[in-house]
Image (tube, rainbow, N blue to C red; front, top):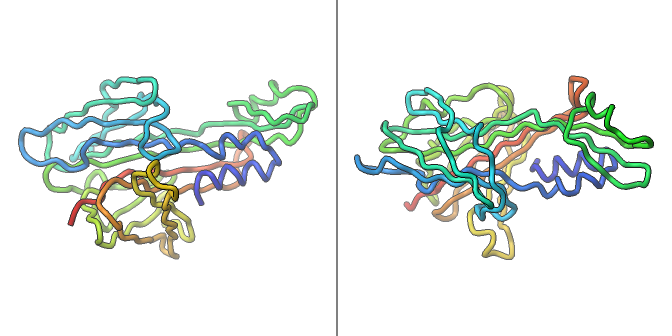
Length: 273
């Protein structure tokens, strides 16, 4: 299930057309200038972060205070500095150690409350169910609150790939890899496992999209599905940059939201054979 589908389901369940702007929600992505570097002199990488409907075409800047960098030894530190422009955020990162590095932004829960006002217009508040009670106008109907969690990540390898940064944290939607994400090659099969709260996520839908959607009439999205063990596979048709995404939603178990949602987005590169 894609993020668009999740948000459309939320909108339909509450009969709220106010969710329509969210149903076309921009994908937040992390895009390194290089996914693999070799040699002793190449230690710096430039990374773009933005949110857009057109894949990898910068549209909205992102506050990167929550971006975390995990080194090959497994230690995690916040991003030291970044530049937030009008259409994207940018930072340079030094990779002093050989091995694989993880760039990750996790957020949530982010609360939103949708409602229909007395004039029949569909509205939303960026607050949870309890706080929204005091802000809802008289005559508000079809009230529904939603809590969202996001996990956006990418990997960079200097030298040979290493495994420490691939260890799952057991929270929300995550991936484990039979093929290292920095060792994916065009034309060769790739297998991954989707997890939810540390356990395999069976019967889930994912979307794989190659770079260049702005140059195609068809976005050419490949639909993927996990099996009973949460596993799925694909073969990149060509070398280049890719976006892999998936979402999950369920009824909330607390009094702050009616629904809860989780999203996962991974950017990676398929190398030339």
